[in-house]
Image (cartoon, rainbow, N blue to C red):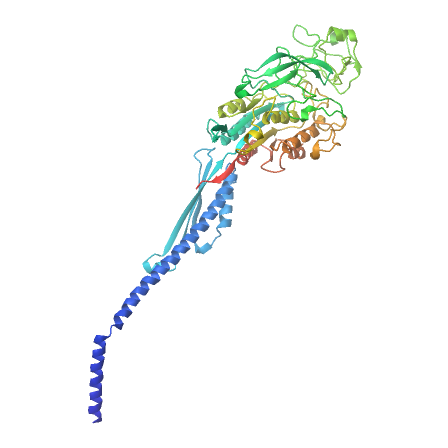
Length: 583
């Protein structure tokens, strides 16, 4: 019974189980849910891996941007690639998201003066859920292109062409040409901008070669001297002087004049050099060689004539004044048959050596004393004898004014050959300043009012020298500061007057301090940058660092050899450009 009852119950349970199985669909739902869950997990996994890939690419792009900008700032430097890798690694550290990085890859410019730099990289990392679909890794790639965008820029190259540069002029030309090519982006003309239907050139470059003097004429074959009916008092002599004008071949173009007023008419063989506007007077505030353009006291510049002070010449063109063969002498100094090699041959700091007035009347073009008293001669140094070259000639190549043609400025640079003569850094910087700034005498630069509301304009001077300030016969200061490098530190001419808040009145009046004062005016009120390259010389590093806008790169370079010289020019060119991300 119990067994029958048990079997009956088992049979009933079996029948109920069968009926339940055929009615219940719960098993298929579970299968569907399992399949759906697999898809959902894979989808969520793909989303997670995609988000990780976007995060990885964003980090990669940021690192490339930082690296490309760093490389662009030193685009022409040998450190470019190492700087790019350093900035990339700093912004994309090793092990980030367990990624394996391929790069950064640096795309070389098509030529040495290209204005673009492309940096790219890729990164691969393992997926978290992608392997459910057979995707084990994900790779992202990015690239950044940096373009050096020129600001509106006026820049003047002031190049030392004194005798000590002989043998290095080829390297100077190559380095300066490379700077020009970089700034022009290897194009023939300046980039332009059009605002309110007016088109402006954004790049102007000038050139001032110099030794002990600066040739303000030689860069313009069409320049000529014209007389005027105007007169003015020459501050150096106190005499009324007729005003002549050095008129350039494009004078009046665009309604602007480009001319230099001259105190007196130079002779027909005038080479193009002028004296500094300077009076040897510690209490005098009219020393206009430290100011820009014309002043009321100094209406112009006095030409350095071809043979100033020459009195008697023999058939060979040699000076025979008080010739030793006749036993003549002046102040105990016998003059030998010294060659007439340049201008203003006889000078010295000693004034007060009288000369008979009848002799002065016979030779009215004799050398005037620096104090303007026509009854005085300046005693010459006794060692100026035969076969010496006591005077620096006017350098044959002259100023090239601001212009926008790459060919023109490169032609001018390529003409810098045969360095000769002494070193007058002060005048080299002074005339670069004249060329750079708006207003007469050259009047090529746009004024701040013309451009300030339209686009920014920067101004800069690139000064290269291998020497120290020195005095020489017939230099721009008539040698009043003495002979040789001591002219830079001479303390026998009093002190310089104060000028604003950037200069004190107790600075010695010598060529070095005049250079510093002029540099302060350029960097201060004129707001121009000064880049200085000190080449193969360590004697005046502190002086030149203070002339520059900064004591280190990119404003100051002490280039020990030609490779460092070329590198300095490249780094300056890079700094004169700005960067922008274009992609």
